[in-house]
Length: 190
Length: 190
Image (cartoon, rainbow over all chains, first blue to last red; front, side, top):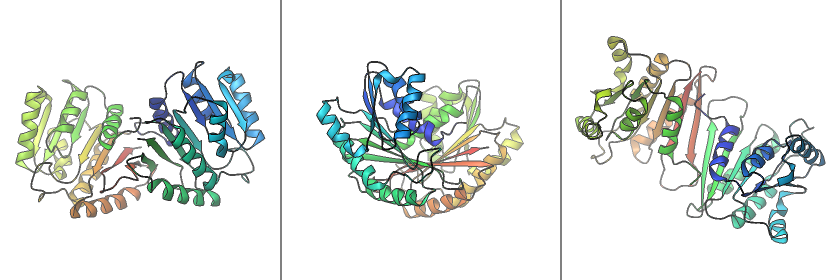
């Protein structure tokens, strides 16, 4: 296939943005798929800071990272990504070079706990503040569920109003797929 | 920059889709920018079939290709891309592996001659028929001018109605840029 799927394209953009040794953020670790990808990419000299509000997600991710021997350069927080700024400042971490948000609910869970636009927008705003120029934030947006539709609309409204001199916003989606396929927003700090 | 501009992303997707020796189509040669890119990519064993209804465009492209010593494996037609099917069949060419349409008016011209949705859709339909599975069509859509808006709407309506089992349609655009920036549609035959 010449066309990227949404997740492969998210990873492709992150690969272009991240070098070994970088500090990066997985704002929604879920089952650790993106966390493992990022940990491999930044290598032993880099660091992934991962967030999830669900204990099960943090545990699943920890197990996966241990199995893949990637746990040593990942810091997992069972907490909201709205604490990103506080943690970066209190720990004195290097500025994050990139971040990913995989929005919606935890795959395999009961779907009652979902991300929401308020905390997502708070975390994006903090990251844009912390990041250097050319810092990249990738959002994978699932909007098949009710809360997802609201989050999608709020994020589209928020991102399309960002000043293009400060942040460039790209959107990648499949426009003839049925059943609300996920799509991608990528924000690059100018 | 980690984010692709629209034209670099069009070329990136074409690079992934095309191998040396392939037959490809530049449906709107303009000043030869994409034609030269494609000719470099397919190499001396491949062939680019290029169309433009404007004599000036064909001449500009011919000059550019000669200067870059790429003219030997490009066939230029001063004709509408609605004749794609007829030409492929009458000449017995190998099936096209990829095609690009750079829509709108000839850069540097008086803007009175533009592409239009009827002939664009006719040509896309013919290409999808001729192409093998995984054949790729990339459309770069300029919609800052009046005819461009109509062409955009007609193409969005046509492509979003394509059966996802037969053709996958991806869209890539900058969602916070002012002044109607061009955007990309990419169609992959399934």
